[in-house]
Length: 157
Image 1 (cartoon, helix red, strand yellow):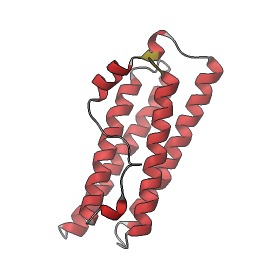
Image 2 (cartoon, rainbow, N blue to C red):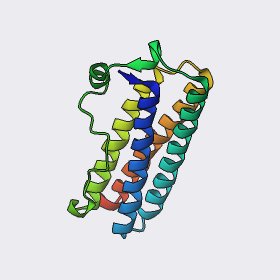
Image 3 (cartoon, helix red, strand yellow):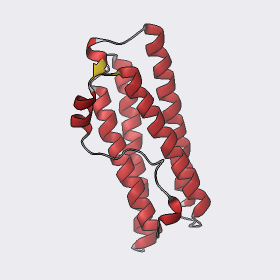
Image 4 (cartoon, rainbow, N blue to C red):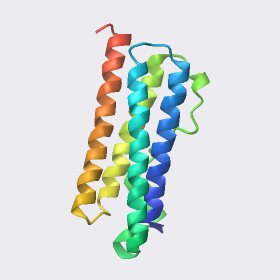
């Protein structure tokens, strides 16, 4: 069984991996249109990780767990399917184009949203649910920003 704390640990790692990915991409990309977006995304992913870390501390203080706070590995796999989630395995040196980088980032953002929507079902606190919805909205905004960059750079829009 995965506890809600373990699932939140996964969310923290997702956010840290995404921040690292965006910062490494920034070091490799010299595209003026994309650079400020990568900085923004990295900063927001850092902020998301910090929010999940605060949530983790609150749960630890409340000694949350058991019952609704646990999910089996099989159940978690069935909820999230074969989503990849992790960017820590991505070798940026093997990415051939800015478009490929953007597509990878968009896919990660979509996977992250799926994971957070699943996580919502384990949260009873209205305020925490509301804050998680804000994180999801920011992840959706990340997709929009990335696609706008792709349109400007790849399609000349």
